[in-house]
Length: 431
Image (cartoon, one colour):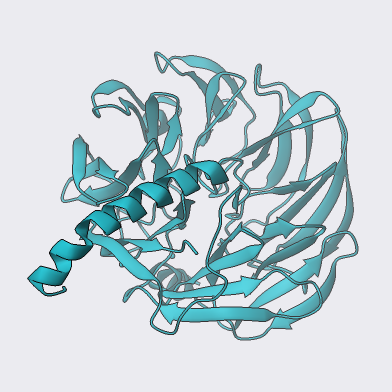
């Protein structure tokens, strides 16, 4: 199994002078017009993992109907350091979290040009036991005027969005005696009920910890669960707010204000296994997925309890990517990167039935916008597809990155931000 883990981690963007002058005023007018159109569409930011609502869905975006074989236009491109953390986007700034030498570095770039706005760094000595990449795994979280960062070594930081100045830091792994796990910290923080909440996996009832947004002080800590690589979500059902956390061996709901347990049920397996996909909630149902023999689970939940309705191992067993809910159907990846094949599937979560399968598609991350699936494969291929429950409908594909691509993409104002192990690109997907 050690060799398979190691494979997994290797396997975890002129015209002539006279013509230019004659077109300048027209181009300026077009730029202003496009800006006004984008504002009218109400397209938003991508401030955290899996977007505004942590479900991989971008609201009020308008995208191209098909991808040309040459791919979308690259607006800008720049090198990045180690890490598998996707970017966050808000207020015209792209926040990048990566490792350079012995520092975990957070940078803000101008979303339109890629030019640096500010930069801050934090020393780290983290070394992954099972990966040759020692960079951060967690997507930055932009909340109001603050940016929250969770490094691979379990260090938690808060900086100001305006200039990157440091507000506070906590050594969460050290403070709560949390182990590094297979790949370091990989569960992206969430803000809920006015708290910054992290799946720390510490000892002594500090599996999940809430921190004060302004000071970083501990607000509450709960459960004895070890951490996973799944990122929590917050949902309100029938007036009750649930913080849904998938830990190492359980799925649970906590009161985000107090940490009180609402419900918990088993999910996961001991041994060399990983829970990494985020939970997907549809009404009063939770869908969970993992590979390594764990499989998929659908559970119905209420204010204080949950009941597993079905568990299946041949439906949608995702190694680390989160499926997308569109209508009443799920679209996601079944299989593993280190042990092919992996398939793109459409699943009915109510019955647990596979509606169609695009076999040997490969591992990929997905998001949804403008009634289209935006799919980024680990080999750097961008695919546009229709989320149709009757059959797979591809709308084009193009190679956009050269190296292994595991970081989650981000979509804001028609711009797709993608990164591989060495490069961050901004791609124009506007109509």
